[in-house]
Length: 418
Ligand code: NAP
Image 1: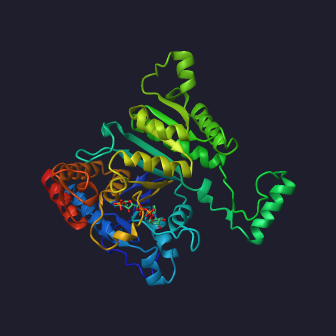
Image 2 (image 1 turned 90 degrees about the horizontal axis):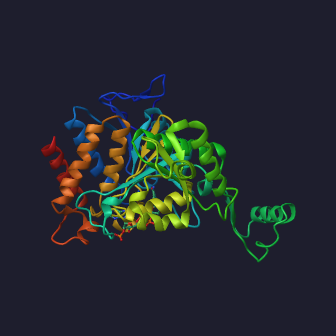
Image 3 (image 1 turned 180 degrees about the vertical axis):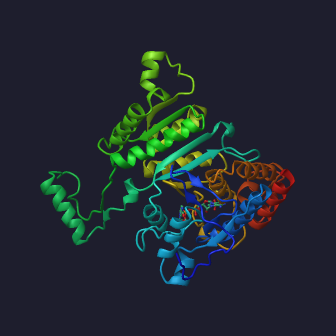
């Protein structure tokens, strides 16, 4: 495809898909990058520098292709999410982005949601693991090693809602009250109404992805998180469809918690993944009180956002927590944190979350050696007390570095360790 405002790197090659659906990754791939809004212009270049160094140290090269969304796109294209950006990510399959600002209450819809939906990136995956040297509010942060699989296209991300006082909401109110016989709740003056769709298709492909991950990575369990006691036909159904996948598609590789206790006295067969479920509010407690008992988590959109931030708080917070959105044969890496506008352009915030999101991208490319190097270099940097403001305020005798200085230090350590 030809681009209007985007420069395609001349030397790079495109990542493609083999007939069996696996990725074919050249040693010098083209990777689109969106810096994003707010602190994106600080953490984006920092991550680029570190990922480039790790690729180079392992005999490869990343050819960045800068694409635009949010503020930078408004400047270039006079729109928030240009078609070119979406097409560039589709065409090149693997990309990385920084945070994008979303106005609250009014204004345009979330560009993050738009991108994930347009690219059908249905699994938002957020690993939370502890890095050596990172301060934490809990006593044993090393017990935290969970990976949240959060459904990325349905639930609150469907964006189906109507504003109070509009003709539309009145039509929906009328329908719900008159046709569906629900008169008890929404007759008290102005009301906003939203719809929470949870489909069998969306649930099953997400849970399948979580179970596949657990099997491939030797994880012990997959926990389905829901509020099915209250939302029986949405969140409860998520749980039931999740168990259906586990029981019908995996044979002996997967065992449910009920069967485990009813038939095997709690002893899981070697290599099998145990599938269980927990109610969301209880789960927020469990991740603190029984941290080492949980492993892979699979849940709907809103629960996934809450749970993964709560997990992230135990391992250093938003400056550390990485993420990536997976579709079939496609990935868009992005940190969990937002654009933190108050720190924009100050060369201050922690780029680790964005760098570790890039690390997920390296793993997806099959560059595990480069991914390990990135993690080791970050641990080396933080353990030596060289950190950004967010960690420095929690550590004694640490040296506070700017975003760019921290990235330089990680690159130095990559060179030292390789
Ligand atoms: P936020 O941007 O994540 O920032 C909240 C706080 O988290 C910051 O004030 C800071 O805390 C800490 N933080 C975030 N990133 C950090 C980093 N890299 N290093 C160190 N500390 C970091 O959340 P928000 O203020 O709720 O959201 C701001 C905007 O971002 C909103 O428009 C929201 O919609 C958007 N957003 C976008 C995404 C995305 O693009 N995927 C995700 C979430 C939010 P302290 O000030 O306490 O140090």
